[in-house]
Length: 238
Image 1 (tube, rainbow, N blue to C red):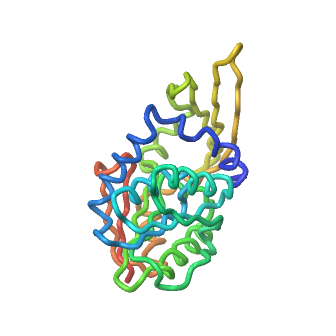
Image 2: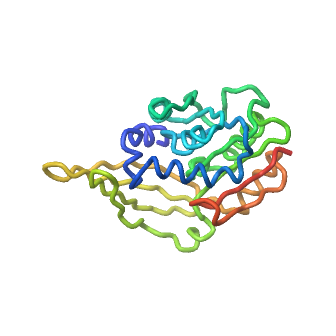
């Protein structure tokens, strides 16, 4: 379900942002607090490149990987259009096609990790992220604020309007500590055209994710709740 969801979303993902380039620049500026200057970075859930391109434009050497080959390809195209070198590959974060110790920083942002629905799968992904990090490297990861969402259990998100008057909203169907998301896109043309995609998430709490990161071999994790648009976890390699 996850790969198909992002394959279908890759062509319009940028329309969720009022100004995608401005969002890239803003998020990259926020991430520089956690990504040392000169670092070689792997974005292991790069999507169409929102963070990877932004970091590349700030001079970082970035490699992108994503489960969706359609999204990864678009990331490379969009990077090239902005004068940024961004090698990309389609890959599952549980099996990364890179040599051990290849990167100074691994990022997994935009709530990508919670697509993995079991502790074993999350642990497998975290172990792979740690494997491709050099000794002393760093993991930077963001999720939704599931500590609050597990309490509130929202059933929808407010509608937003992107470029071209594309209207976006989500419906959430809860099942224990997981939920299925339906993403609605309403495109204005001669009449409104509706596109719907589905994905599933584990609403993993910060304590649960911290515990799994430590089991994967990372050092003590720190959470930053207001430094990025989602809660951000930073954990050293060992």
